[in-house]
Image (tube, rainbow, N blue to C red; front, side, top):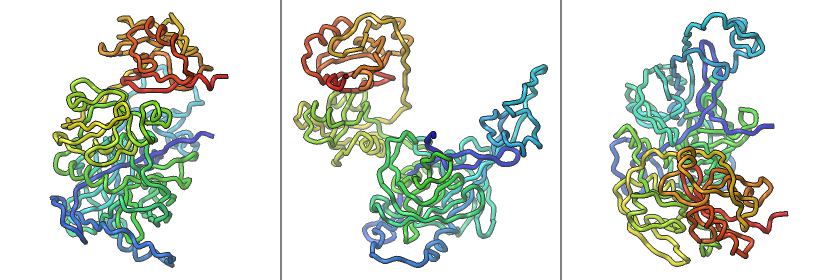
Length: 511
């Protein structure tokens, strides 16, 4: 059975109704309502940073919490125009009930009538999701995927059925956060918690509009925190919960047992398309910073270090003389980047950023992304087992580019990297594979799928830049270096799909 990530945001309707799944992410500036000094903000949201009470007793009802929070959770309806939607866009057209209304034009089993060109037809695609009111004057948090491409957005309060026209203040696809604004006063709004203080086992409630049936509350616990590396969004630091989350919940609230917002519901892990007890929400601390930038600038500006990072596995940690697996390994330093100007090099292991310990490459990405461009920060690295600290002035992040790889004719086979055939990079290969002029090495033209090299991740179209800490400029050098390697575990630096990384090929695993 196929397992897949599902966005749980909007339920789509074309002409009648439909089904499209979605997901979320967020961040914003705030003021404290209790304890500590007030933080400066121009968005009057309320934050209570005290941790939830964790006494070992059971409550018989969460009704008081629901009555407090539910009025601030709204339904979000969107409409956009689509031309000649395909069957993939309209999954319900396979149902005989809908064919009674629309005929067999979308039935894959029926012969196509192509005697005459099909006239362009447009449909109104209607979708629905959820949102959370965060200020009394009408700022609302939801998911980017709920409102992306919408021609019209309506917001409805559940109890009063009051409907408002909403405008998009800003969207951030990298975190799937969007901010809406409606023209209203004295609205019920949610209080924010400090999501860094939630713990696994804390009770949480999910509130939203699943399947468009109306506002629904489900209960669960925090199953995990800091979930990431799943490829759902560019910036991932999810709260995992077993509270039931389904299509239509996207953009809805995840609150603690005291009714404070801890996250925005965004995604589910499902084999069926529905809830299976593994749901994800974007932590509200991330949401706060994003929201503030969207309100005041219309976009999110992120810091850019200019390095390609990779996971520091125990084997790589040993190779780079790191006492434990904490830190982020630098696979490549981009030219003229902040890191390059400060003196960082590939092979460095970043263990501290701006005074905070770096757990792994994912957390470092979050740290850098939430740091404003122009800020000067201390970056501590391990280089050849010794600590070094660099002063780095972050630049502004630009859109990343990626390259794809294809097969080239084989020439030579490496001795140490059994099953790997390499060739020189000629002009045709450089153009076809989009290999930058600054990248030199041996082009992999074939990899035996039964080899240790294939298992480690080497593929056709990759470029071997280093073998066993020794730089190689072409296929001849790669073969020569490999002849003199006596160990079974070989460290290889390889350029692949737009960036460089380190891998370890363990020949001892070969059968």
